[in-house]
Every structure is written in C-alpha cells, then in structure tokens.
Length: 136
Image 1 (cartoon, rainbow, N blue to C red):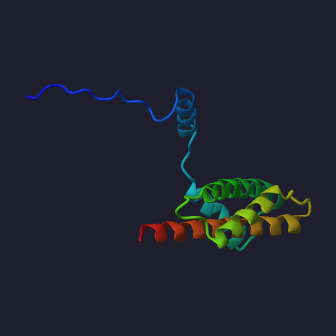
Image 2: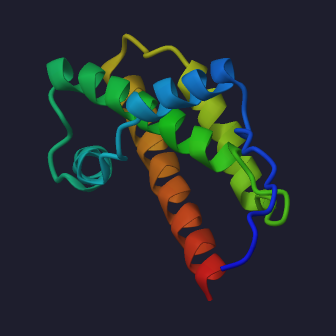
C-alpha cells in the first residue's frame, strides 16, 4: 500500500439555488403524450366526420398545448446541431397558430384545428427525422 495522497475536495457544478431549480423542473416533467397527439391528429385531420361543435373548442385547446410543447422542444437547439430552416419555419408557424384566437364560426374554427393539426404533425415528423439523422 502506498502513502495517502491529497485529493481536491469535490465541488458541485452548480450552486444550491440552481440545483433546486433543476430538481423542481425534473420533478415537474411529464413525458410527451404521443398517443394523445396522434388521437387528436386523427380527429382533426383523418376523421371522416369532423368533430361536433362542442368538442371542437376542446380539440383546439389540446392542439394548442401540443404546439406549445413541441415547438418548445424544437426551439432548444444543440449548438452543434442547429435547427433546420424547415424546423425554424415550423416553430414560427406554431407561435402564430398558438396566438390565434379560436373563431366563433364553426367552419373557421375547424380550419384552425386542421392547420394546427397539420403543424403538430409536421413538428413530430421533422423532430423524428432529426432524431434519426443524429443517431446514424
């Protein structure tokens, strides 16, 4: 056995307040509800019957939440892999749709739901492609 040697004391990489903030964010994290995304996309884009008026407002609210969540994820770029021009365009379109008020007219509201659904679909598709590209 050798003689003991001095080792520098370990110091955490972040201060206590920042660590507490990170812990709070991790504890508040929820996985992406992918099944819910696709159920809402089916209702907005694929259903042979458009949703009835009472359900349309709730669908738009859910699609708005999906847009916010997905565009927030997409906006956080790795400096080594910046978002593509297409992804930047989708983030901008998401912000515009997110801010758009739900029209009172059924047909106009259905159009908004379909535009939101299309953008959610494109965000999912673009992020999937980017993820697969990063793995290869």
